[in-house]
Length: 177
Ligand code: 5GP
Image (cartoon, rainbow, N blue to C red; front, side):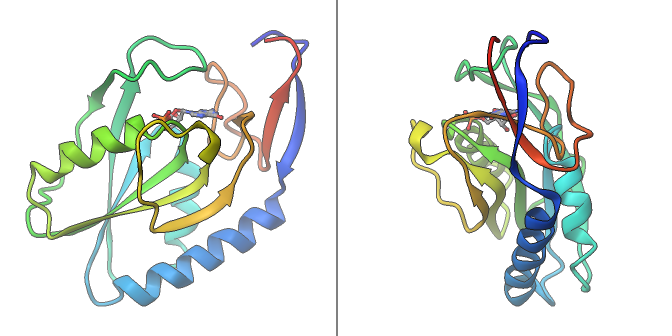
């Protein structure tokens, strides 16, 4: 990203807080008494999952998996690899995947295939944002924060070349890239 790209707020911190509380309430209804494993997808979901779990007042566990498309840049190459494996045994567990954004859906599709081989009792998906106009493979989203336009999002954990993860609002970058 070049310095001429400008930041615009898309979802501000108050809207995010409201969405996180709503998602936590939906998740609580479904997962209370099931000791779910919340699986954050690194790196983009770390801020979201940290806020989300503080609104869940029942026993749960947290783990992370690191996924990356080969190569870098703002376009998903479609070839995904595991760069940090989860450490918790998931056999017979109720797993809730926590994502930052579902874009083409390729990363999520890869992750669900990867998890199914580990024989969990169930796997569902919670994502803070999705960009439906970009979908290449079908993805079933169980808990959704925001539907976003086809723009490159940063902030609240999301980066552009490792920058802007610390912004409290979800913004988009526009201008020269
Ligand atoms: P997908 O495989 O669904 O195309 O992309 C999933 C991953 O691509 C996300 O988890 C995220 O890491 C990255 N990604 C997709 N769209 C955006 C975006 O608008 N902003 C940022 N920062 N990352 C994105």
